[in-house]
Length: 306
Image (cartoon, rainbow, N blue to C red; front, side, top):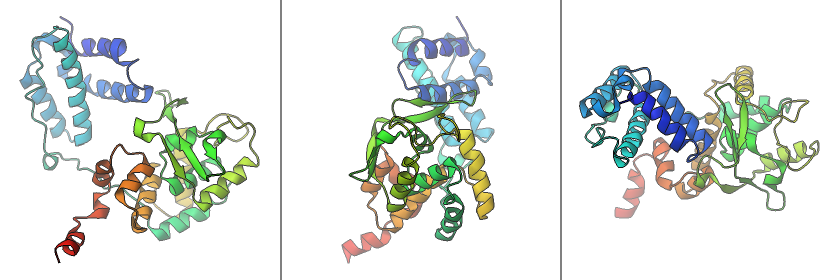
């Protein structure tokens, strides 16, 4: 029987490639490439035991991988062995009895999302507001709306509802392995399909760009002198440049989304409404990501029992 790595590759190409979104498949491919670095991928599929899988998981823990990375490996193996059991390629799934590590057992702890303080936002906005780069405008829109970077880059002018001062998010830009970018005709998840309001600053920014735009089906953020969408690499390059000029740390593109969420929290935004604006599948996801903001709700509970 073929080695596990070979079998999983075939399963991915035959069954998963057309079943899941392209971005999801690329993430699955990343998990697969990590697994290929370890001896478990060379074991014949029928010979893989629960002990083999457990040792693999333990090895990842010992080597300092984040719990989210380990969970992705677990899910990859679970998905394949579920298929293999159903198709009677093997008699039972060796993953069923595997124990996943607790959060405190993992060396690389879960990060608290970084967000810019109000003074940092003012410094950064002073740089971004120059309008000298489409990447700067995209960052402002992300900060004002909580969009993911791929959602902002995928926007076209017909996504803007000028009368309602709102924007509809229905697609995203994905990054290929060679660094190129392309538009995926659907967003990250079903819940990511949403219409959100535009702040006064975001609306004014889009009005300014629209005055220089061509057709309504063109991307809003294109590389200067072209009709090509701005790339992830360009966003990172100019994000680092803007942060350096503003004298604030560069935390990556997701920091604008986290800063938006933090700003909403401090304005008293309900977690359910914030979840809808961010495109999360549930308020529980939003709460778990931003639990450091909401705390233990002790004072809220005190108001109930007093």
